Image 1 (cartoon, rainbow, N blue to C red):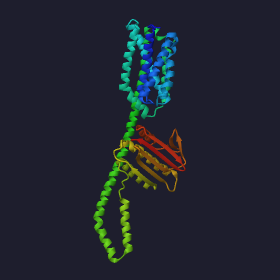
Image 2: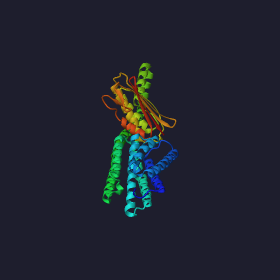
Image 3: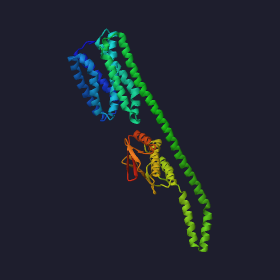
Image 4: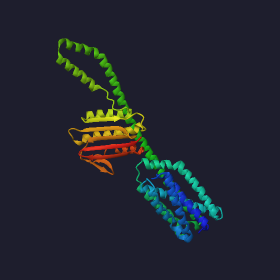
Length: 430
């Protein structure tokens, strides 16, 4: 149409276009299968699409120019979604972003060949190769990591982003081929069209960047919150240790006086008085004894604080914990997960209206996984919305924080509520 069509040119252009699309998509995607299998299937897709595209452009170049982009989007959505772990809306957004860059590269290549290389078609091919290398480098260095962090860590409404990206691609495609193809319009119109494409791409880039910064700041604030909470747990444990050290010193100091009193009861033969005194002494020691729930300092600190909270709220709490110190989970995330679950458990017990509320907490390692299970009394007002437990009167405290921290380690979390009993279970690979 503009630079001439030969079989070799058609094969080169089609292969470059679909290869760039697949490469850029994979840079931002999370494949469902191994990389070896994924690359094999994508290679087949590139070959099949190159053959079909080459035949199509050779038979009817006009319809190819008008419908090729739409065809690429449709087939890519179906194929890429089947091989991706991302949602359909994430896949659509990813494809639309890459399709836009693909179209932009095609227009720039033809524009470069027309105005700087006397319409030489091979200069268009070389330009596309150079363009592809630059875009791939930028993706690897600047976009892949923040994009995957956005996708894996934060909860984003991808349906709106996918819809906007799809409309943008349709608009660019329509403006590029109607009323006549942009490459046979005036140089001024071509520059305006390229400028619109650049603005749209920068809008996408800035939007993603701003979203990443905002969510990153939100994450930092949330981590600061749990750092403060974790420090409070450590301060509480330190205070308990100091109190028990003081208690031990006092008991040793008072032991001489206790021995004199015991000896006096023995001399008088007052067995009843002696037993009563010994029971009082035993109770005093038990009431002030420091309980070590777990070897892991962070988990032990959390249980120490919440056991006291439960006791003050007249909630019976049972704790079974067996976790070492060297697990590969940050203290701040342990605090966010276990602290919020126990906080919700106490809140659930208080709202249950039960005369004998209880909490049963278990934390241990099984088959290389950290297992957390917390069962507590609850009311009938708990319901589930998108898999998240909520109260009819008040939303569960910190559930989103628990989800966020569990997702960092690609863990699993599930909830169950029946017969006035709520159960939360967390499984994290170590």
